[in-house]
Every structure is written in C-alpha cells, then in structure tokens.
Length: 111
Length: 108
Image (cartoon, helix red, strand yellow):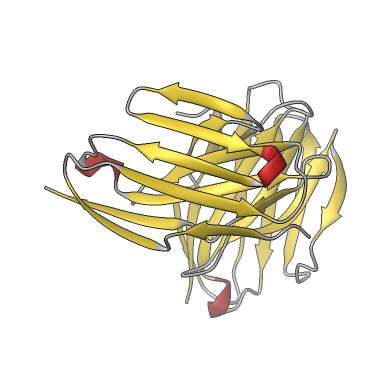
C-alpha cells in the first residue's frame, strides 16, 4: 500500500450506467489529482484539487464529474461514458513541497 | 508546457544485466520524480530527485538540473524490475508533466 487507496480496482460499466470512483489518502497531503492512462499514451492529467478547491480541469468532458468533499477524499463520478473512456484511472496526492504518491488505479471498461 | 522525453522507449534485458534510462526535459523544473509502473498498473515512486544523486539498493538516479536531464540506473536487473518507468517533472505548483515511459522487460 502506498498510502493512497483507490476503489474499486476494476469496473465494467455500460454506457447508460452511473458509477463513481473513490480515492482516499491519509498522508496529510493537501492536493489530489485524477489521471487517465489509455493504452500506449502518456498519463493525462484530468483534474487537480488543492485545499479542496478545483484548480485545474484539463478540458475533460462533462461526463466525468469530480468531487472533493475534504482533503482526504476524492471522487470521480461517471455517467453516460463511451467505450473510448476505457482506461486506467489513477489518483494521486501530494504536499505542496513534496512529490506525488499514486494509488493503485481503477481499470475501467465501458461496454 | 514542458516537454519530457524518455529513452529508450523499449528495453529488453537479460536478468543480471545493468541499464541506464534517460529523461530529458525542456525547461527548468522544481521537482523530478521517477516512477515504476508494474504490470498491474500500480505506479510506485522510486526517487524524488530535483537535483543530485540518490541510491536505493540496486537503483540509483542522478539529475543534472542545469543540463535538463536525469538518469535512472538499474544494476543486476531482476524479472521483478519489469514494467514501465516514467519520469515526471514539475515546473509550476503541483502540475506534473510525464514522459511517455520506458518499457522494460527483464528475461530470466
């Protein structure tokens, strides 16, 4: 365990489903992130939350909706996804003065 | 944004061999990290190394910030070293730029 826990580890969902990914950290970090990793592509930054405020949204489609209720938890709400959204979704956290710690990821398949 | 280039893109080693992975970046950075992504997708931080040299067991890393590159050395490679190695740099607060990775396959 790295200190950043993601659930579920695997998720298969239909295009009409609504699901949520969860990320939890107990490292005392004050920033949390969602990354998407598609096959044969570099990691893509999706959202950044710093002190529970969203500070970055990299042109992510509205079918992805993040939520950060407190500094330890981060969610990614999913609805009406497309097959091309199938990917590994990674959560990370960091302190302002330190490096990243990643979770184990959620492998999402949209059918 | 900052461009991060890693080389080689693919590397096949026989168990016990040594290797050097390289990361070049296009601008001054505040932080640089090396990560190992195992075959199950988990990203593990190897080194937080904005400058200088660090060693951890069979792995060591050197960053020469003034020349905008970092090297990751793997000695006496093992099959468990297989996976993708990513270099990531930070220029502005909390925004990481990732390279495309080096895919390492260590054969027994």
